[in-house]
Length: 295
Length: 295
Image (cartoon, rainbow over all chains, first blue to last red; front, top):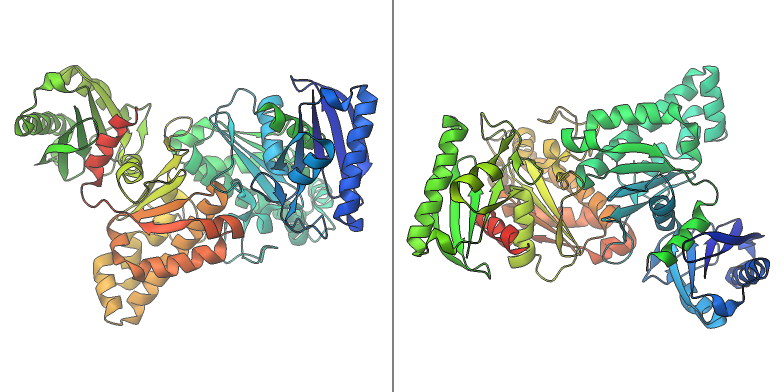
């Protein structure tokens, strides 16, 4: 048996699963991120115990624990400084949880975990090379190459949100200008649309509001360029779009697919499928389970 | 023993090598590209026979033939429509040469072959994940992942030259706007510098000509952005720059490295080394040999 933990800025989702990834029990607790790392780690342990009790599985039956964490994870162990976990600076969560729970803990950034979840259990099934992108407050991603998560030389590969798409574009949270995240994320759409968020921009666009429609069109154009870059570079079978903004459906996918057809080279452009993610709010915990199974 | 063939638009370089890739003989013949595919293929066969005679090796001792060809190669066999081989449209060169020479022929696009050559015998030795870029009339590339050439799902991966870096930039030969090739290739530099080619731009820049200096700076900026995108995406150990434009040395590498430091994320940006290619004009034929060895 295994445990998957999705450590988010607001909630911790924890599940006990069997060796095929089938979920036996799952629980959700508040992260209480504002109270700092110590409290958050206590909550992770508490959620783990709750999930075990709910599943009626003793800790001794657990072989591995997978944890999906926000932001870059270095050395497969250490959470750097995610914006939504204040007070966390290079916390070796693998070691801390490993010591308390006396289990092997596998740590992965949440976008990579989600990529693996979609590959094994979602829209990526059957593909060999695929790219997962999550478009919400930020833009993150994960790359599957030859059926395996590609992590790069120091474990940070897949940062699709910080590809510079328009070097004279708006400033990104990372300090650069014109990153995909600054052009096609939820806040980027809301800024151009003049709405409080991307959801409101979608509503306004569906009602026919011109500014909102143009904001979504612009985001889709930039997203289409970014995806085409990935298609030309990596020639994947699929690009899977998840995250809140991807719920816009055809309003986003239709123009994105048109731009990808235009900007991609012939052979890889015709081959690639741009599809919505299949797993919803539980993609994180399924990803945490998937990183255990892929060992 | 193996044979490596570098089929270029002007010359065909053919070499006989031993199983360690050591070259025993090599010959160079004119491609005569303008005379069409039939004549070019005759010249390939002729160069093969010449190289065998020069090496005093009979064809029966040859186990495999590697061929590096311009432009995208599909299905590991077919040359599509390279601009410098007029009259070639989906020519299955693997089958044609295989029938005539009665050997297994392995076909790879020349940038991929060069990437493999640099990885095995050049500046990429000892790295695990690396990207090779050749910057000359066009910009091409090859990606090594986990010590192997990454070809993607339909064999076209590595097209770094057609990443869109500035969507409002100048038109590229491919029909899109602002591809890296339209911004940082030799002709792009010459166009901005107002010189006949990149070499003259370099000379003028070294003499202090402001327009030429700015042209090279601009190309280096765009190149730095493109490389940073690759660094954020693929987190490689090395990015190797080859091709005529890379011979500018520090005039190009210094600003490129500065921009990569600025535009890359912290961990992958500090890890990556941006280095010049080691193999020179024979990189193509060494690449053709390398694709035989990597099987």
